[in-house]
Image (tube, rainbow, N blue to C red):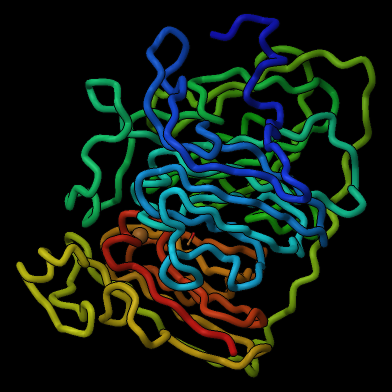
Amino acid sequence: MQAAGVVAASPFLPRMSLAGTGDFLELTARPGTAPLLGEGSPEVPIWGYDGAVPGPIIRGRKGGTIRVRFRNELDQPTSIHWHGIRIENSMDGVAGLTQPAVEPGDTFDYVFTVPDAGTYWYHAHNRSWEQVERGLYGALIVDEAEPAFAPAQDVTLVLDDWRVSPSGRIDEGFGDMGDWSHGGRLGNWLTINGATRPDIPLAAGRTSRVRLINAANARILELDLESLGATVVAYDGQPLAAPEALAYNPFLLGPGQRMDLLVTPGAPGTLALIEMSGDPFAFGQFVVTPADDQEAEAPALLPNLLPEPDLANAVEFDLDMAGGMMGRMTGAIVDGRYLEGEELFASRQVWAFNGVAGLSPEPFFGVERGTSVILNVTNDTAFPHAMHVHGHHFRIVARSDSEIDHRPWRDTFLIGPTQTTRIAFVADNPGKWLFHCHMLEHQAAGMKTWFEVT
Ligand code: C2O
Ligand code: CU
């Protein structure tokens, strides 16, 4: 338990320790140590932005420009992806597709405008199954140009799931094919902003904004949000038209996904736990502090302006996901060659989209800028997946043949085993864009493709 009085030093207050050079924020990927396992336990070796996990919160304003001078002080190449930003393609940070990886000792300037207000995040996008797992991620918050309301507190919570080995390390056993061919590297230790079971102070009687980011490699977080009495105001950064009550509890937040909540605690005292359902491990607790003034209900956030897909005239593509253990896939094309059985397993490419594992030289599809696109995704595997589209937000139009009326914008969607999901978006951002599973071991083991907008 944290003692009262350490709240000011709490990791929940935005940490913007970025030093500037001219207009540039400086951000360095380097090894460090972090007190992930809680007070009294030794610090754990990690890789982090500025040596910390999570990295500093990077904050911009809608329509503004973010300039980051990135330096790689790791001993392997890396790059930074700005997850959920409808970004210029050359700044998307996908090593091998939109830029060469940044070599050890090198720097790279990321300069991009942020068209949408909301909750985003940044993370390594080279060997991300290892680099993100070691701690290379942080929150990227874009404030509204004119805030709809002033929350009592604006709290960003980056949630992660670590695999701590008996020796107290988080970096053992990477690349295990059991993980890659099953549900990914699931952990046994949960942190919020790099802390174990922290107290999260919230003011009583006033509305706070709580931003949740799932930075775990593979774990779909099951969050008990009902007892919080929270309303949802945004998914994946994009505000809803009106605040909404939770449709179900526990709420599933997949790897890469975000959600913004409004919470107005009624009384002082410990408010609620966020925990894994069916798992006694509590994530953390909100601790309510009395406030002297009361406040009226907060209004909805202002929407960002995204182009609405024209469903009647959209171009449709089918994507069949296959592979993994207990799946029916017998073979796949890997680097232009059809492999099966032992040979396929030895290639470590055990998941495929439309029979192709990993990136091929040709895009999955190419369309002209402005085309409305529908993707029909079928999950013919025994596992759920968290599918992420780069550079665009989409609407989920139908799931397993039932039309969906409620269609918030998303950049990552969960799809269960045997489900089909139909998503739609306007391909309005020129360039080469990745579409992949955000369970990072699945991505590494073949679950990725790309499309091109010209
Ligand atoms: Cu958050 Cu391609 O990644
Ligand atoms: Cu997956």
